[in-house]
Length: 127
Image 1 (cartoon, rainbow, N blue to C red):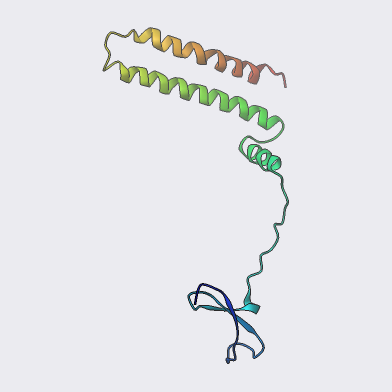
Image 2: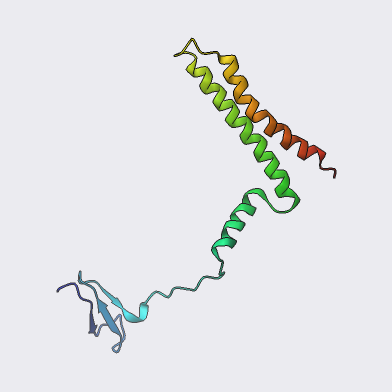
């Protein structure tokens, strides 16, 4: 065959006499009445709604989202500051002429105001 799908009428004990069979290019056959039915999606969501739902699953909604966002800000600031400080420490083994204390001060002078601002918001918002 040249890759075309053909319809064949077949009589067999497993299939009723009037059922049609679809034969593919490799010779495999599937009964037409055993076709797979695909159900429509249960919910229709737009792109914007799915992004919002992913974010709300991650940080929550309402007051919990505000607290989660502050916690994430503090956590990532400490993480990035620590990793950068460790990278500077590792670099000190290769370059001994660099002033490590000034480099680490510079790194933490960026992250400490962010952490202080987040903590001030978390504890100063007056519940």
